[in-house]
Length: 317
Image (cartoon, rainbow, N blue to C red; front, side):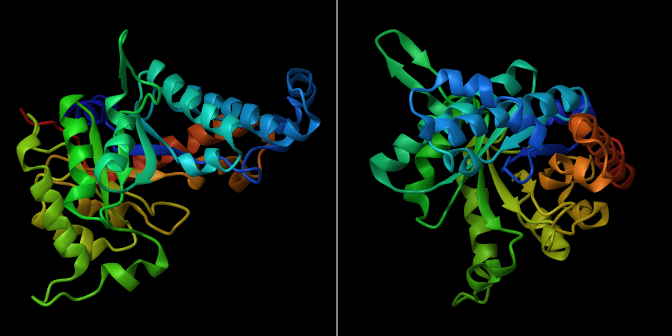
């Protein structure tokens, strides 16, 4: 997690911008502007809707990345939004990740994969890349990915090994911000602890051999801002686990809610905002052509609000 921590300290900003485009979130003029160009490039008119969205999504992402690259340390594209429009969308996902890295940003691929055996190892290729006779190729351009722990250690180990070998990171779902998460995560186990607490213990253990120079391992946890008291408990329970904290902004979380996720040095967590930043142009009711600058204004507001609460960010080591 050292590279992410150093990027956060340099930016003095513990926030990550989610890049989760949908037809409802991308300004209509962005989509419409590519219709003629895309139509000329396809063989079948039935391909137009997906192809046009794929091009529009990349243009939308590129403009937001350009607007915030000097403010935030990281972006988090959600792969489902791209897979929803087919192969062209997957291409846009990888292009977005590559472009963000080229702008100096840490890329957290929100893929939420989870399986066992050879399948888990194949999914871990998001971190390890592809090796052939010509060497190593990284088709995904991700610095970290999110992982589902439901299958236990068998499903996590390939990701931990890939992360450690390639200086990348994973974030394991532990206490998520969605309303129905308590149906499973709050279940009480035989020993009296909750399922999410046991998962946090496992995450701390999975990363124990990968702790870096700043005191955090390659194995992080996803812990929602909608449960601030539990955030604080887990910060104490998992001192070497870096948190990815969704739920800020559009889901109701604020600076006071996320503050318990941080340690005394202002480290320990990165706070995600997706719709809050992507949809800032709608919230401001500004001209849709100004969507990227609206995203920049919201990213600055978010940074200033959080940093006013947690203070200066100082890396250890």
